[in-house]
Length: 156
Image (cartoon, rainbow, N blue to C red):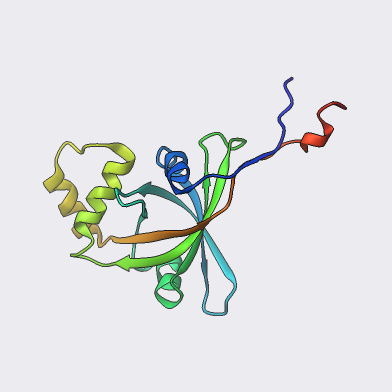
């Protein structure tokens, strides 16, 4: 069985975007009214401007929290749970309907490509009362991978 060793790779903004664009699973952390963290698994995309996009509903805790405290953090995960991840933080904006519709189209495209019927998709977003969360990336850590500390490499 091959041993996996922990790693941290520092990247610039371009390298960060290259890493997160194909990844769509994240844990979003927001702050509750009392300041304690609230975390939600989310599906995310990346807009053409590099903002992270998340679709949600106005009643969800993450949305309520972001309306009170607009700072958000995400742990963007690889599809393989043991794969690499990166932590990102920034300022979030909740966009309500009808202004959110075109951003929701961008969100869908960034994850799944083209829809077979964009008019139907737009109407579904309106019917469901969706909101769009836009997170401007302001800070990020290294791209990390868990495993044994590299110092143990010659001992294993």
